[in-house]
Image 1 (cartoon, rainbow, N blue to C red):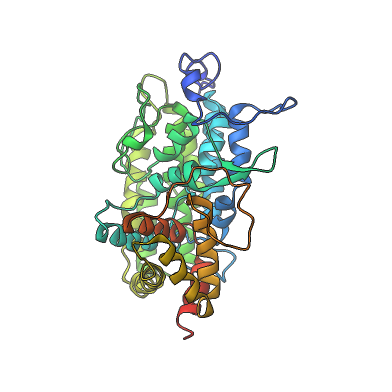
Image 2: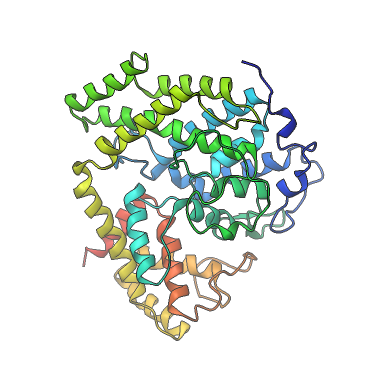
Length: 409
């Protein structure tokens, strides 16, 4: 292996596209004594965001909020960060950029994992919108929804760099491909219409994309075994896959180690970020195994219905308050507080931060100078989008709490 093969194409000041990489939607406030790079700043802004904090109570694959040993969305993000930064460091890429993309790549996941995404897709389709997909919602989360206080105490949008934002929406690890290379052109990220439509603009984004797949496959198997979700017969099939490729076991540490080494041995700027052919075949075979025996397992059926019921019930309750007169919509919501205090108070608080007219809530909103993405709530589609945003940001625990509030009466 030869280290630092990608040093010349890393996202640094020597890169010809550096100015494009560090461009921000707006001018982020500066500090005279700041010692961080633009990407280190992005990393810490994601770290301090509320969306990142909520990942610890969001399902990765297995809904098991009382089992501390089952992977949560936050732990998955940490795995991706570890894998991608190890690879980036060896290849000579910008580790700060890689870390920031990895940290933010799943901020837009719905509660209840994939099942939450399925129900939100149904809701969007009913409103004439396209599917919900978490990569785009992650970009929406960091561009429009997440807010941080600036040095004057005003709440503003995150204003992350283009390279980080691009890496987040481009990270789809579901596409089976080997030899990933970045696209050459800078585009408006709102041009993404489907998951995985474009490759990342940076090599660092490409690394995160492959690291995402490496990180979740082994851990999902480990959790399935821990929960006795797969049978001994299924486990024997997995061992046959391991034996086929000369492995004694297929688990998190084996997959991560062997695939990292293969990527570091076989990736070049000419061939792209890639595994050797044998390990790429193994990766796809394990992914198919997980799909057949874990993700499509009938044992998930009751959970699927449960997640759907919770999300649908919350949406229906809130959408029923809509009136073409925005003031009446707010009045309708306030009338519901006697019955659903947690849900309605928190939803009104959500609306108050992103609407252009004043909503009487307990919190002082004068210091919120972020983009008002819902305008004056003048149409039902905008109001529906506000509900979808609100639900997509929920943790599993919170969604269950407000659902229990709904069924109490």
